[in-house]
Length: 609
Image (cartoon, rainbow, N blue to C red; front, top):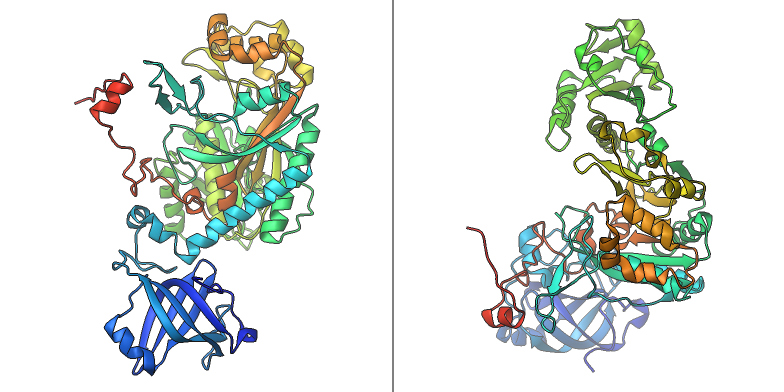
């Protein structure tokens, strides 16, 4: 046998036992006539002691880092124990060894504080995976996977595979396409999600379905996005929204318990999409801390029925506020002592291209109750105090104000709020807060095409009490300037997102299951009857054969793992990720294919000069 125990298994109770270990050489330390070697495998590290009788053999066959080594010897108590590792109380006095394979000098050190940069470690990912930090991430990923499967099995969900080679129905993100050799000039697409298949499984009567499944989207990359990613994909029939929310709150709480040892007993908060946008500036708010938005000025149609307090800033002849569509503020606790250098740095931060603001105004609500502001030329102290108090500020706080176009300003303030929360240590890695965001608009208006687009996807049902509104009204928008008056502008989706610490980790909806309503949705999105039949005729046809009410949700598995692991990048939790250009630098993929393959696929390529 190659080994009797692993490198993380032996303890003092094994003393005087003869064992055989196998693994990789982590370090070699020679002290005169004896040599210490740290041997590593997936399970841990064990110290080896090579005595005088073996040193001559080591001189003839020296060990190097990452050599594959097999040793036999006796377990003994270490004289100099290492309390930082589970095996730190013992060592193996080696009686024989066998070098199973030698290793070239690694391009970077295989340890947590490695000297390898991202590009180098991605090229040699098979070596990077040996590092303990990466191994822990993959162990966490496996633990989340196992916990989810156990929970779903206990709740009668059935794991059913769906195809990877499907029909391209491009809307939203771009499809990856695969040429068909047997059907010249035709292409499969890789699925962006199993959406239509899981709905068909409900029509087929499978009641509760799930997959932990690969999905594919050809889109620009960032820290939390990969061209191939994994979802926990679920669907249930004969359910309403409340059934979905309760079931999948339970799933995430179970994962917290199994993976992090956290007994999440708090009630999961619920918030409407409009309240999230009004209070936090985005639809996936981090509710672990306050700093809620003060809406000093906003377009009346954006939040109809919300009270206006623009009187706090009106009439001061301050053009930046007067000419802005939106003015929003937050109160940052305990920061009134910020220096000019610090406020200038924040101004530069909001001026960055990814934030896109022209500037930043501030009010310092000093500890002694006085106020100083970058706009005190226009607003007296009484007005500044009224603004500060409306923002919920207390003495010692700093009020930050942004002004500009509605969408950009609200998004920028949301980002600034998160940044200040991070700087003040309010976004703690080991603190988790769940939130359901509900009642999204069913449609968004596309001014370039003068039509509606689906905020979620075209299979999402309206709220039950608004189905008639959708059926009874034509979707066409005759007067683009008055699209807000169209009945579709106020239809809410029977949809829900789960948010964790300011990240959307899951989203879903109650689905359309009647053919006439689904055809109405396709028409609303600008599809002709012929186009709808070409793309989704199989689904429309299935709805004629007793389709049950159904709904579901999909969780971003990679993102959930990264949040639980305290990382901002999902790449850290994927065994073989792509880089920011969508390349696998280890395999050198994507790559060209030879002319013979192109000919077999009936494909000719044309590259731009």
